[in-house]
Image (cartoon, rainbow, N blue to C red):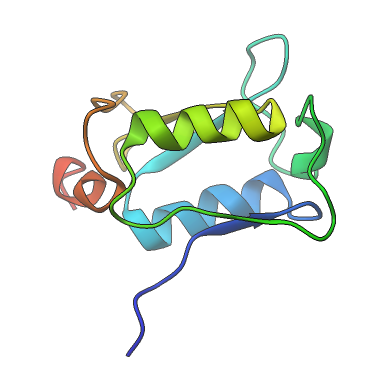
Length: 108
């Protein structure tokens, strides 16, 4: 069986992206608007992408990607500000962790 995949496309809602991230990596993905508030889960990700998310593009995040690199890619490519917290959304995780390590640090 293939490993679960985490990706983002232009028309996905923030809530769907957050849910998919938790299913794949076990942590809580926080996406912020330009005022540094948590993005509305019912809105499409394209609303919060300062640089836009091209319709033909799919953002992929593999398990060996470090949290810092993941956040930097989102910011550099689309202008999306994100943080990763534990599964209970209580504590921001160390950016040196890989995405596959998120689950083990989340207590689940």
